[in-house]
Image (tube, rainbow, N blue to C red; front, side, top):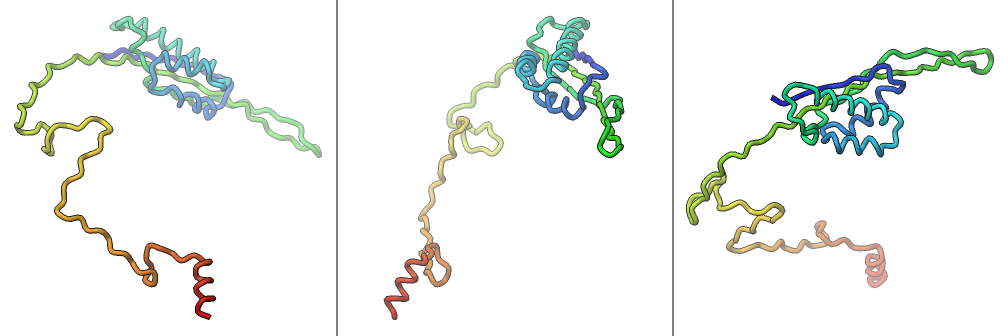
Length: 185
């Protein structure tokens, strides 16, 4: 079973929406790549998220069953929930007052260990000229990015040229039509 651990920072002085923008950058990444991303992110909340991520890594390394390889950890889930908001009042013109809302957020980062894939025994190679191993048949698999071969056809029909009066492929330009009218007149 893969090890999972999480860390939470509560009452961080930022909005959950702003923190969510940075958390979207690291979701699903390896922890080293996530730490590098947070280090060079230009948002102020990235420093707080980096602290939470480092705490989650430390929590995972203390769990029973951890393999000891931090390289195998990745950011499984990360989210920002809205915390309590502080309401303040700011003086406004003509004796009025504007409300200032100082938002807070609860940041949570969950890391998990990638499972180790044990290589299974490779299947025997297909016999040359034998039945295909692909479900649709048709021979061996083509390399990635290669285009499929064109199937031979008996006789390819070329499309007939359309006449300009019936809405053909060619359009007359204004200069040509003007010259044609002058020539007729």
